[in-house]
Image (cartoon, rainbow, N blue to C red; front, side, top):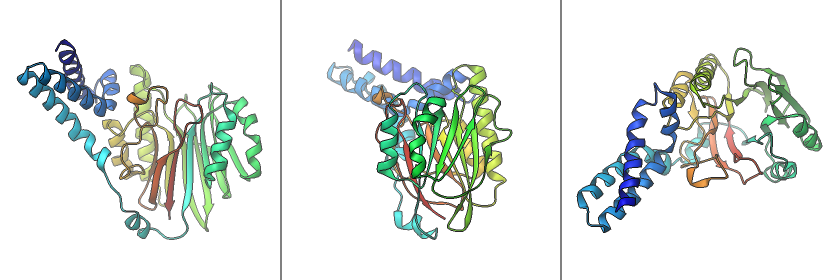
Length: 309
């Protein structure tokens, strides 16, 4: 019974702390684990029910339901591939995004993943000099390559089969994090692609920087006229009010919407998994598929998005 009370209490405190998430950075970290809170409360409910404490079990069940209602749209959402494809024209384009983790030395696993998935373009986050050298061989498959390098020595690399009409750092995004802005020529059309690494939101200052970056991206997206795709490690989950505000301000949609819960981090603790690696698009892009890739030795899983224009 004591363990059931502990699980229920933990889930209850965490659930109520979420109410303060928009204002307090520490509570904003707690908002990402709604699914886990529901499972904790459900486990507490079962233990308390078998321990002969029906009222406490009912409380635990209510906590589980409260979190389940929030998580349900992500868990059970469904997208019709025919409907998505019908809103666009032309062949399917496949894009992959991988936070390789700069301390990861399993270069071959990333190379093998790219060779196996054969995306039309790949965005690689947390690239350093060692990673750039290790990935040199993939240039045979990808004729176009650009790296946006941040002040901390880590950067974002774009590999593309499609010609790059332009590629540079994204001006105005951040002084501490790298962001890549490229214009790809795909089937005769110009497609704007942003490769993003948002600030890790540990601490009030860093959390504020991430939120500022999300606001900037939303404003940038709203000003774009043609097809736009934003991919990368945004260090925020779909449960966050800041992520929802980012989508709303930029008139964007998550490519993962309609494909269920897609946790990408941390690979070393799958039960605590949340989605912080994203692909988002504007109305000029019709997503036909979104999925996670297999592990490449990083603390993040890759993501693959397919779309038509």
